[in-house]
Length: 293
Image 1: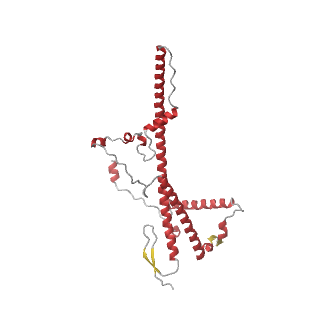
Image 2: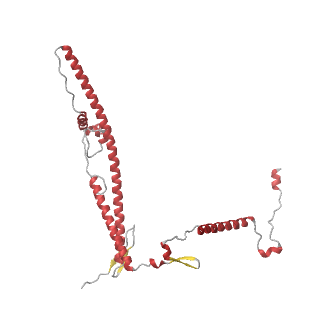
Image 3: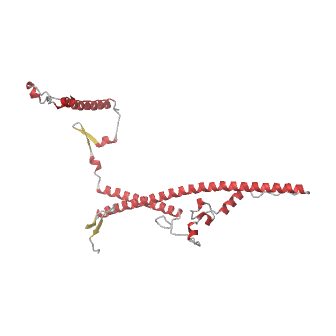
């Protein structure tokens, strides 16, 4: 039945039109038209109320420097832009100051990058050393099983260093030095029993001394690992700073080229453009040759 009811033709309900005696007022307003008009009316009303509140709370002693450069005409603010019209001489002086500042900043960044490069032991401008350390082994099996730390006699955390790479013997010496040296031997007695006891005491002290040395060595190795991580992090930050300094120096060089080109173009002499701006670089001009004298 539901499908049959939907198939039956229904009456088309038409919207009521404007009565004849009110046709001079236009088309009859529907709800969607009223809603649009009401929203616009309330938006304007809220704006006026906000302006009234702002005017009522205004400080009579309020002052802005922009008041000197604007005035009211027909109830509207009009900015006086005469102060923005700078003379050509003043513009030239300002551009010269900009050029001097850019050159100073470029020089500072370049010097800072050079100091960082010397500190990081860089050998070329790319930041990658050209020196290599070649180790020769007897067979391919030895090459596959080659261990850098064992070959140089250091800990794995220091194997990748090209400088300040301590050997295990040096680390052990540092541990023994911090420990304070070997213990003094005790005097032996007259009978055999006392001598046996003294030898046992000495062996126990030596074992304790060796144990303390191993503990001290492990502690020192942990400190070395922590120091290696700290140095690696500091070196990474220094490399990032070096890269940013170089990029900024290049940007300053580009800005300097633009200002120098503008200064030369604004000068005297007949010239023509031979190459347009390309990839941020300034345009290139060619001046007509002029005979001197």
